[in-house]
Length: 613
Image (cartoon, rainbow, N blue to C red):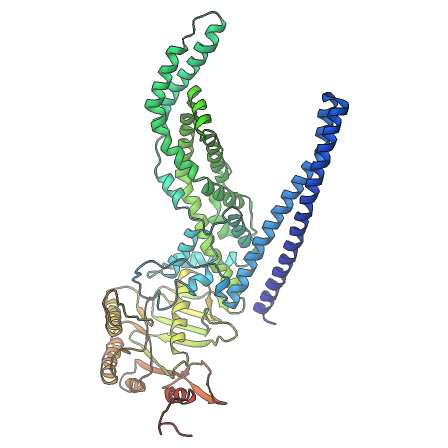
């Protein structure tokens, strides 16, 4: 049994155990509810009988003792309820891992919507974003910003070799730490049940920092007037002096209406709306503060901001939450009026929240950045952990124009049907023409190269036993579509795409461009397609780029006879037991067969005398 098969079996066993434990805890929670009710009724009966039979002096201690079992039941029930929640969420996490292995898209978290009108040299062509994409398969982030960061890494058009090496080291350390990854996801899910957590509102709140000194003088004046009110209204009459509160109180209210209400309402309202975001970050950051992973020097360096004893994130956030609770006490119009009439309640909390916000504005961006970085890295590490037999870290060189991979596969093809191939691409101007029949695997092979390069440049593992590659600029023309809204026909859209490729090739860049083209000029007639394709491929062979072109046009294979930079490879097919059979294996040379008429004949369509035997 392979490592991947063992890992899948272990996940299935864990999911079954979690489901069974969850059911058992739910049943226990239901039983405890009945015990709680019984304990409450018995305590109430004992309390009532004691009051009427023994009087109030005996009633109080007896009642306290009688309700101890009920309180114990409440505590027990809460613990069991917490265990039920934990077990359910852990089961969800394990099930999502199994769904990634099986490419069960229906049981994966919904994908982030791709950016509107995304103009990108390879994103849509390689299925990197959107539904049933590489990003959806990889993405284990619970925060929206963590998910977006992973997406940005996959869409990087100018990869940084230093960042790639740094991420590879972190992903390698995180890969065996599956408990850490699952627990980090759990912490967020426990407090954030409404989809992905977004820290944007929190970031916006921090960006509005107002110096606390703005509130200091009004607070000092109003506090002094509040103290004067108490002295003038209560102390003076008690010692025989005249009550001066009729003078001081209007003065206090006038200053409060002038300063306090106007300066506090916006900040307090914004703070209250962030209660959920603050609680989420407090829980997640508290976990990162206290969790110590073993010998992981790169990970420890990344998480260093959470391990500063003098500035623990949860302490700062806890202060804001406590202050928010004080603000909440004055949200009722009646209680708010009473509190603020006697003391500058809102202004006091505004001043201290402003101080906390100033402190957080200096530190929170770093904490959020580390958290989002960890979530993106965890996604790549989970992919490596789920594919122990096939995922490996590529070797990347900053210079040259060379790509070589052994047993390279496509992560969006189910493992039972996935066929891996070797491929070497080297030298400027090198063009590989891939021919083959319909459904033979040409387009999938182009995407396999592109997807693995995107993974490599993101800093993650690739689906190959070995891979060495230079840093390329990547460009693909595989999924070209017409646009009714923009008035583009399919052919014109394809021409624009291929023109963009030529423009990219002509740009003076330090890195070579690697192109992937599927069915060149498919939107026009055979004669013009052949003329245009030959001219275009000859131009590519004279450029500084390199890449692959998949095509049905067998006439194009003759270009290899006139230019030693052009090479032919193909995929084969056969007919067995009345159906088409494909091996999806790349072979050198031009394709010796075609299958369009075979497919038509097998479907019962008329093909005349073109197909015989």
